[in-house]
Length: 397
Image 1: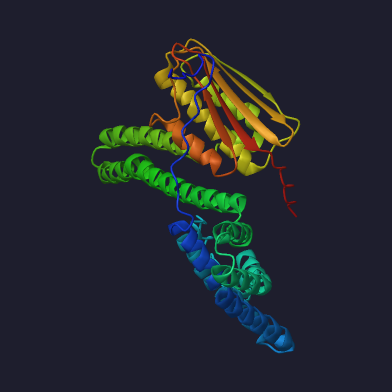
Image 2: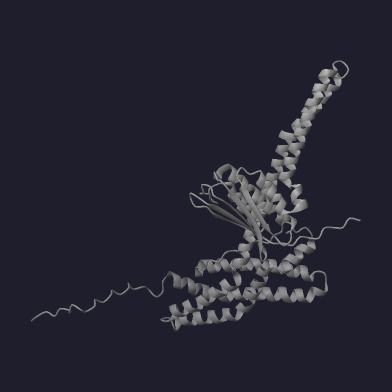
């Protein structure tokens, strides 16, 4: 007999996947979750009906709304238990919602209103309310299939469990966009607080080490000149002359400090004049172009000024540039400031430089800092800020 060999063009069959038991650990977890739906749904439904109907009946009294607010807080705890059950038995990874922001809510009425409009609590009440018929259905089908339809129970359990997963994700999971925004605002609030504290320490340090020390020396010098005024008028005149020089230096330091806080030229004449003044102190020639139809809000104008000022200081210290330019314009509801130089480049936001601090400060007011700085230059830094209209100045009567 001759052996038959497969032809050269025949395709070899792929090996079958290894057999998998129908009732594995995942399936039994899903079955346990479906059987536990009925008692969990009963507890949730009784809680919802008790809270809602009792609170609605008592709204004619002073305890109706506080009782409803307390019920919403309790619903948060029921939601926490349901998320834990889904994680343990269904493998659903649902993040916990942010806790109630009690800080900064001083009055009782403010806290009560915050609890009454809590979307997490209301979604949990809705979840527990619609779960009773679903819990009865899944419990009956799963229990019956355990004895009658056990060959198809794994597939049935998987389908019912997927519906449960969708309910948990839809009603018990926090809003991704809302939670992201809350996290950003909390981070930005910390940045604003840290920046304000650092600025306050800088001002205190500059006053203590600069103008205050000069004023102390001035007071001592004038005291000695007063003592020698009758005994040695010539020496007293020399000491008064020195004190006069100290006064000039102290005034100059106070002007510089005031310019660092909020320059008068910015308040009086706006960004064009203020940025031109900053550019005149830069070590390289700077061309300033400001094209704004109106002046933005004071806070936005101040942030734009200090952002450009710090970028020009970086050019003077690190860029090794021959020239630079500053452009400021409005685009729709955004204020854009672009600083460009022909220096060595290589500036990065994540290099531990002052650019990172600038980006955090801009982010605190929904701004953005974009850095384009290839090695060898040129460097283009664009700061984008929200445009806010300037409030009308109060009339002086």
